Amino acid sequence: MHCKKDEQLQRIINQVKSLTTKGKLADYIPALANENKEHLCASIYYLDKTCVSAGDVEHSFTLQSISKVLSLALVLMDHGEEYVFEHVGMEPTGDPFNSIVKLETNNPSKPLNPMINAGALAVTNMIKGSDKDEQFTRLLNFIKELADSDSITYDTIVAQSEYNTAWLNRSLCYFMKEHDIIKGSVDHLIEVYTKQCSIKMHSIELAKTASVFANNGLHPSTNKRVIPEKIAQLCKTFMVTCGMYNASGEFAIKVGVPAKSGVSGGILAVVPELCGIGIFGPALDDKGNSIAGIGLLERLSANYKLSIF
Image 1 (tube, rainbow, N blue to C red):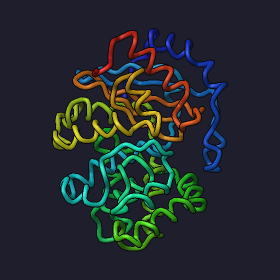
Image 2 (image 1 turned 135 degrees about the vertical axis):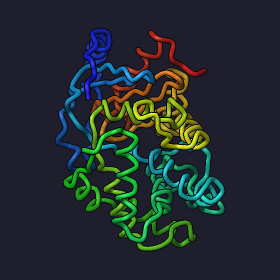
Image 3 (image 1 turned 90 degrees about the vertical axis):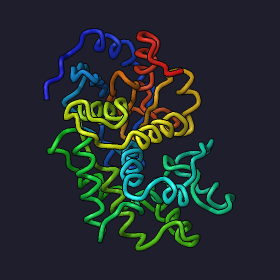
């Protein structure tokens, strides 16, 4: 799709680009260790269907944890709020995204929210489908519709790399299976989840996906209702409270828009009633967020008064 190169956006990218030297790649996933730390790009898709971009926009990347908010939307559509929140909570956590601590200390031991790994695994487990392939295909098709792109697929090398090293996620699953939060085969769930995290797109497609949430579930490019309004609102609320891992509070103060990050360096950001933003910068800060991506959003928010607060 056509997206106009924007000089102002390029200037802001140039201003924050040096931050990439302070970040590090998510090398605990072997396939992500090969990224170029200096990559940085941003795309903004407005609700009037205009689009601007700057930086390395031709570079695609895997969604990783950004997919958590998309699988949540699908599962809420599949089952409704009451069922979903019987299995996963709504509260932020100050712990890292892959922590097992709260599962042991909470009673009942359901994960605190859908944006940490335990909660996201419980959510993926709820995707409707007769088998693991149907579950993944339904999610992939839903994401294609959000991004308004039929070419979206998943990165088989990243998926395999994550599947082979997902010992902590398997542990979280077995712990939740013991407490009946997760049902069925853990290995099948890990396979669907690692493929889900490995779905890849460009920043323009990510901005389009974000624009659906900005428009309360109505797709600005197709004018089709992809997500019910209430579910779009719920997803945005989780993005504000839990979307940036355990830096969500600081991000809400400094940037002030619903957003979800992934350890590949992607950030999906939503400016309600205005636009969706897709960012990619694989150099991460110590919380697992794109270091230059956050710097970029801070500048954009300050310059254009984007904070919803």
